[in-house]
Amino acid sequence: MRIVVVTSGKGGVGKTTTSAAFATGLALRGYKTAVIDFDVGLRNLDLIMGCERRVVYDFVNVIQGDAKLHQALIKDKRVESLYILPASQTKDKEALTETGVEAVMDELQQMGFDYVVCDSPAGIEHGALMAMMFADEAIVVTNPEVSSVRDSDRILGLLQSKTRRAIEGREPIKEHLLITRYNPKRVEEGEMLSYKDILELLRVPLIGVIPESEGVLHASNQGEPVILIKEDKAAQAYDDVVGRFLGENRPLRFTTYEKPGLLKRLLGGG
Amino acid sequence: MPEPIVRFTPTNLAGFVVTLAATSPARLADELHKVFAGANRYFAGEVAVLDFREVTEWPTHVDWAGIAALMRRIGLQPVGVRGVPEPFHTALARLNLALLDAISPEYGAQPTPHATVAVAPERTALPAATPEATQAAPNDSPRSASRIIDRPVRSGQQIHHPDGDVILMNGVNPGGEVIAGGHIICWGPLSGRAIAGAYGLETARIFAHRFQPELVAIAGIFKTFEQGVPPVLAGKPVQVRLEPTPETAEMRLQFDILEL
Image (tube, rainbow over all chains, first blue to last red; front, top):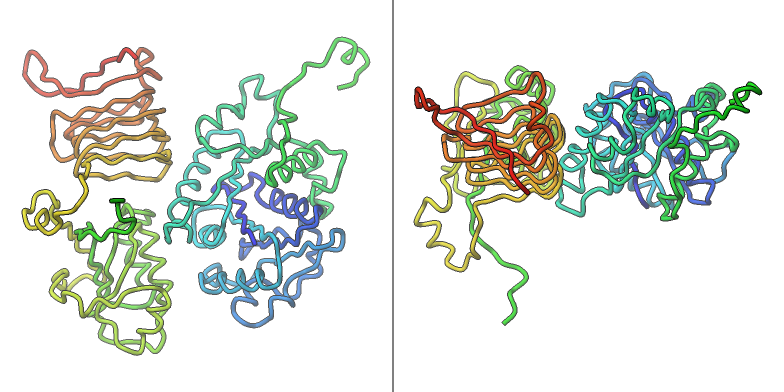
């Protein structure tokens, strides 16, 4: 079993959207996957996954022994072998104890899961540290703006020092950089950092660039992971991310801006 | 004869004894917050021995994992405890915290009666400076006083190497900080803070492959770049050193562009 944390430092950059899409993508390929919401107190993942009305028990209930893990895991209705462990909206975030989280991870392993995707809360506090604690790999989500890149840099530092792998001196966490909300037109116009600038600043292998897309907002309002909306470019970019994560060679898409041609402009397309 | 793949070398690691007069993580967190003003990773990953000999009232349950997490949050790595009653020993063993009461009981800070949390620095002397240490390890392989950092130094990270030079193979990002007793040699961008000769060595220098720092300092004389690094230097290979001004002989920072 591999544990993957989706983290960023900064809020609102697309961690939960990414967690939902990435976990769904893994499950679509037949891997038994659980996605866990570590954002205790806020709870967003179940909304994005469209299972908010099916939540009975949550992650904290399991940690505190009020419910069994199999009672709290919600089986996705669309994708076979995808499970969601929702966060608690009522409990204190300190309820996520290290031993409790570890016990849940051990049990998921025993249940035969291939991947566990941990959706980290924003910030560098307790919840975020717990989300990364047991991770084998990390997807660091960054928007093309300076403050987001700075926060990601901070998180990368924590991944090297605060996780079990680091504390026990094992092989370091495998880091992946994911740039979301990328708008090639605004990059061209100098309003956004280019993915090359970000790569140079962070010096972490790039796993993908997700273009800014209406589909993402639409999908999250519908309670559907964006990766399922096949015709959307963000969905295709997320599919590339899953492919690259599993070792496939997928060239970057949606990173260059093509000026609309004269004909297209005259015809009003674009 | 092949080199043995496991070797044991005595060492005096730099570390701290943290005297804790309470066991509730919440209370300790409060106190630490006052001391460190909420700064995460105040320390740079030094080992810590937690001394509980000043605790007068022991509760039935102690959140040892919580206490250890607090220590890690301020950048200390707890390795053992002292002065903990026997009923807690199994819980401590589960967390891999050593019971150090039996080992050199005199090693430690003097109890401080006032503070709830007393943080006593306990830097041991440099091994090279003590003849006993060199004698104790006659088979020790030659050691470099320099420290090589292969990964980028990231925002919020601090490399503190008082005993010699620091060689950075992957740059310093904005918000990262390097403090060296000796020189700082930086491959890749130097975008954070570089403090060389931190303990007064005026001959220390800073070499940067791509010079774009937030701050540089040598032996306490520093320069910030509020208006940005001057264009003649920015992004260039640069050396920084101290030089006396011709008029007053006062030391000032000198920036030279290097030919590569």
